[in-house]
Image (tube, rainbow, N blue to C red; front, side):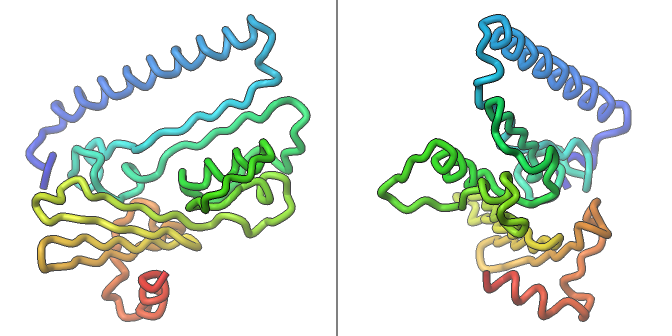
Length: 203
């Protein structure tokens, strides 16, 4: 397993450097916000903070980003709307995908693209008109196509189904994220979640 050969001291150095990079990013974001305020345009600005991936940093014995576990696949999403936007609450415990961002901002700006978009607008959720909006995310990784390695994942209703495809083999993982956030118990073959796994697979 990638990363399993590292000792604790080697991991400590990786963690130290990573936290240093996070601190640097925080400082840079702070400079941008300070400048917006200095120019008097902070209140009217639409600001989005997110990321394309996380980092395993030793979890599951992995030192990489190319996998579907939460440390790698779950990313932050913060949106600050201009002053006066009727946000229904400050924190939303909903699973959404980055594919939802473009439809959301088009909806907010009153834009109606002619071409259909993947994802869906989160405006009904943000404004409190549809509490059930969002709730699922689709993830894929095709980075090792030359090795015939592909990954697909769906997260819905607190459950995650992962499918790893290596040439002519497929490996399945099913996790109850609410009760097993560290993804330590694969429920795929426990026998009591067959219907749930099949439903997620068919989506």
